[in-house]
Length: 235
Image (cartoon, rainbow, N blue to C red):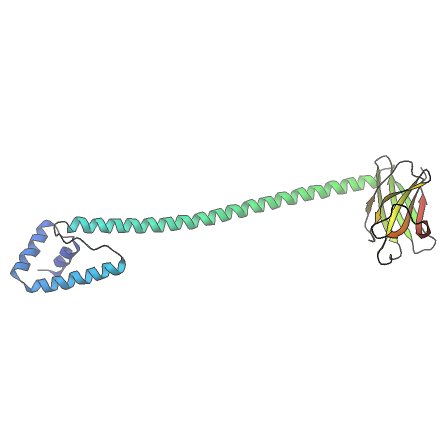
């Protein structure tokens, strides 16, 4: 008898006719039982290592049971692999989607910021081109002080730029004031930054603009003894 037929018999893949042939040979040749036992033991050990359930002992049911176990095992393995692949693909897809959304949001934010900058520059340029914007040059007692201001009462806007100004002492700060009907009204603190335009308040009916040195954070009333620069507003 061919050894291949015996293996088919042990694996449960033999047809009924082949099973009868094997049984007939086992009866005629008892020595085949030892070979059969060894073959079954080897297959059982392999199945145990691979986590495959043992085949039932009933010979007629071998074929159906063996094929069923094989199909179920393959199906389970395929399902597990497919689930892992789809899960990993899903994670990658979600990550890519999140990155794309973040990128689009960053682009949108950048466009908004660029649009805001363009609008600011447009308004900034329009302010200086406006004939109602009066240029004022504030000077002090020495050449160390020179401040440029554009004053536009129609728009209610004013901008200041430091050209020359002594460095303020520690815990002291410059402050701008408008003279309205003889009363000094604060129009903003002056940051000690050269070459940059700073926004200050623009009040109607102001007669002059003045810069004083005050305690850090500003004062309610100007320290006239520390008047550094001023200029009249001539309309």
